[in-house]
Amino acid sequence: MNLDFFKTRRTVRSFSPDDPGIEKISEMIEAAAHAPNTGNMQTVAAIITSDPAIKEKLSPLHFGQPCVVQAPYIVTFCADFNRFGQWCSLRDASPGFDNLQGLLAAVIDASMFAQQFCTIAEQNGLGGVFLGTTLYNAGQIASVLELPDRVIPVITMAVGIPSGDCPVGPTPRLPLRSVLHMQKYQPFDDKEIDSLYAELESAASSRQFITENNKETLAQVFTDVRYPRESAEAFSESLAKYLSLYL
Ligand SMILES: Cc1cc2nc3c(=O)[nH]c(=O)nc-3n(C[C@H](O)[C@H](O)[C@H](O)COP(=O)(O)O)c2cc1C
Image (cartoon, rainbow, N blue to C red; front, side, top):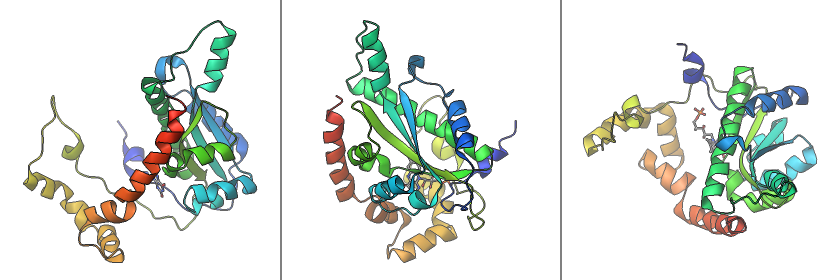
């Protein structure tokens, strides 16, 4: 068993100006579409954007993250009930997916499609970064990409050839016992939490985040700076409105 690829990969946020070529990206999407999906209904779509004018429009919706303009390709993975619904209506069939169950199934499928694409890209010399901002501004991203009704943007990946100055080495992970439970979930006592997070908290990068953001703990960097409640609640409200069209 060779797990080195998985244990050493990392997200890439800065790209060489060289173009890996649309054929290569399309071929990778074709392979990624072999990811498992619900019932093989394939209610997913991927939109590849390389046109600078469209990338400029997407950029603010992804909070101005530089990779949106810099990466040669922006791939938006979507839950697509449109094509499947059209096929059903041509075949005298009535799909029952306009509900939470249907939405979650297609979101899972789009995520697995995206992750399979990510792995294929990384295994073939490319690199990239997922943009969770896709769901934050899903309605506006749908407008820019002219997504028809019942096509929902779920996750985006900016992809290209990694630039020479990308950080090397994997992003640290918590120890295995943080995520692996045998037979049944084993809750952690406070001492175990201290020990599970100790290495991450003492890493130089974590200490730098804490100092740069004037915080006392790494946890506060997540709760107060990166993912503050007010912003999560505001984006939840607009997302709930947008998704209510589908439920
Ligand atoms: C759903 C999702 C959303 C993400 N959103 C962003 C993002 O908006 N910006 C970013 O720079 N990284 C984003 N990332 C990348 C994560 O920050 C990264 O995967 C994590 O820090 C672990 O690092 P690694 O991929 O190098 O192991 C996202 C990853 C996922 C899976």
